[in-house]
Amino acid sequence: MSNNTFSNSEIGIIANRMGTEMTMRMSPKGNPIVKHRDTIGNNVIYAFYKHGGDYYIRRRKGYANPFGTGHVLNGGKPFPNVSSAMDYFDRYKEKYPSAIIG
Image 1 (tube, rainbow, N blue to C red):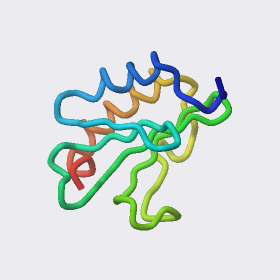
Image 2 (tube, rainbow, N blue to C red):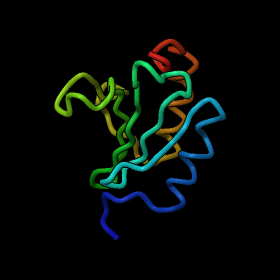
Image 3 (tube, rainbow, N blue to C red):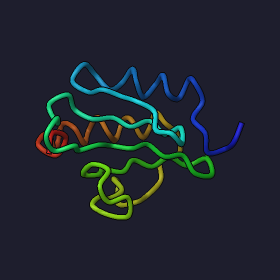
Image 4 (cartoon, helix red, strand yellow):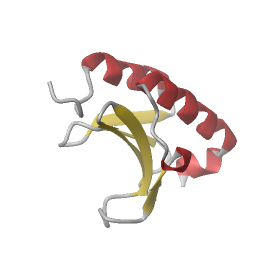
């Protein structure tokens, strides 16, 4: 397995921690993509990336521009594991509820 591929247990942690207001799918590259169920019109998505054993969460406004219109959460600093990334994401959802919907 590649170091940049999410394991089934990591995917399970993300899916379990999303809550009922979020939906999740896997990108063609194997990255979990989550969005709030109420974002039908504005397409705010959160993509989870794994690179070199570090984890990142990126907020994007849809898929129209793959090179922009988004930013990496946590000031671009990586998370050491998927659990700490989800702890941060839970705090982010609480602090910025309007950012989750768009």
